[in-house]
Image 1 (cartoon, rainbow, N blue to C red):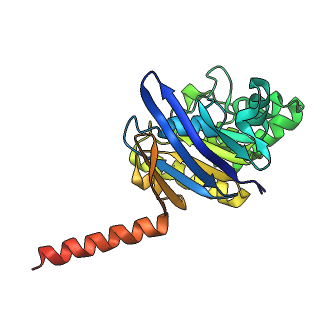
Image 2 (image 1 turned 45 degrees about the vertical axis):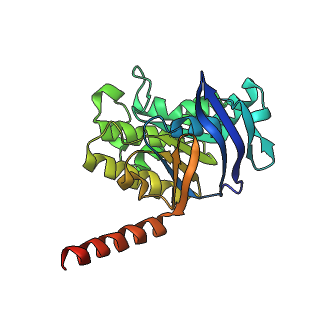
Image 3 (image 1 turned 180 degrees about the vertical axis):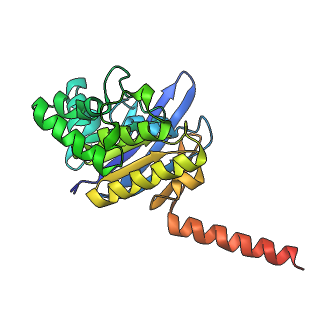
Length: 245
């Protein structure tokens, strides 16, 4: 189980004259499920990429426990992503030529596990996520929801500390997206894995514990999901009462 918090301070990232991140401070606790929301161009995906070591900020630092992620060289960040982080993207980014079980086994094979061990672990995760019967199929032979479940299995197979999910339901219909988020959030909670989800959909965010809203490269609000739900309920009650006058 992950016991390390992810902490970012003073994150700045600029593209030309646009401040994608303009000084972001955020701490994400071990085992916490966090949604990052904001309008297009607000900096939410850039924040996820900096937190996960895919991008380096122009200023500021990211720490995972005692490790300074932003101080690591490319090879060190790549090793961290292989061994500590899992990723789920909008389109799954599965390798089309490989079967489901081969796709899931990739993180373990990249870390030096034997093929037999990697395949056994892949089969176990595919079964846990309800797509065991798809293990010999390639991505093009599966539905979008099945492929995303395979992508979730791949993200979990190496027992990561943190899963980063960038619009994981963006390419799915509403019902399938609901199922995928239920699987992703439940699996993360069962394993004590921290989950960071970037989304534009409040229904997707509702599967997490905390909602961070980012605007113009800065954190605008940071609330528990319980507070978000209570505020929405109160607003609805007020609106209903005004309509009834």
